[in-house]
Length: 400
Ligand code: AMP
Image (cartoon, rainbow, N blue to C red; front, side, top):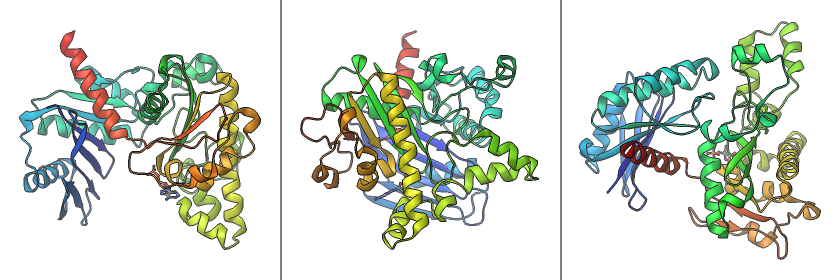
């Protein structure tokens, strides 16, 4: 049995999942949230049993202790039985193209990436430091959102600005959601029974955050997010692509850096256009004739089609187009709008298959009869991918 505990630590939350890789099967999962507030809580589910803790948890250490308490009350796990703890780390800069078994050097490298991800990396580090103390006897592995995209060529990752400024500030495209793009592209190739290493796949991770990825022979060659997870597609609350001149204009007009940051990250995207970041609400508003909602959906789909077209050009066609994450997996109307009129490019979906219901974790092929690009819905599972990469990393470092 290989037990991997996956931890995704945010500034006030810890999402966790314990996976038995022999299945693979989820043993337990949960969320510690509102750490540092009066109303902290742990929502834990283990083999059908739910367990709730509601009491103030002052810091991440108290959060992990409460998680352990929830395990003890449901499925007690001896920490000595853990094969590894896998940590999601948002930014690995250009230093990490693979997961890394955590030691002091790796911790320093994650710390050095804080300026590139000032909101995420400090929280990820806190989670790692607390977990190293809570589980001192097993290896800990850092799995980076950026790592999968380190195979991009300079044509994709280099921004056309002064080289010295770019180098001094480490400004380039890094890309994110790497674990999801890696997971769903591999699953798609398995499902279609085509060799990943001679395939061309476009993946669309459409959740609250959203990104597209062009994958040639199993390696990312381009992705829509950039230096930060703000670029590319229109998202729940993030703008996606915008002329950088607009930022300069706002700053000159007197907005502070913090205001512009909050505008683009928290008050833009579907939220900025409609007041709601959840596509279900936006569809409901559009159905009542709300003009802003109708237009917002058009803007949302336009950005996705822009990248699908770009990546078809970069890849010279595609074997598969993959929809994943909250919107990609559930929103048939968005999938239909993204694929509409693309038959000349090889993309056409079957309306009946697109509208069909799907079991959890089930891959569905939406392709219309005779269309050459296979259009799939592939449910993502970033926790399982982190666990898989952590296990592989621990095994290969044991062999070295
Ligand atoms: P994620 O970040 O992958 O959890 O995706 C969350 C987003 O997916 C939500 O904010 C919704 O916009 C969207 N979503 C989830 N379920 C549905 C659904 N059934 N139909 C349309 N959109 C959905």
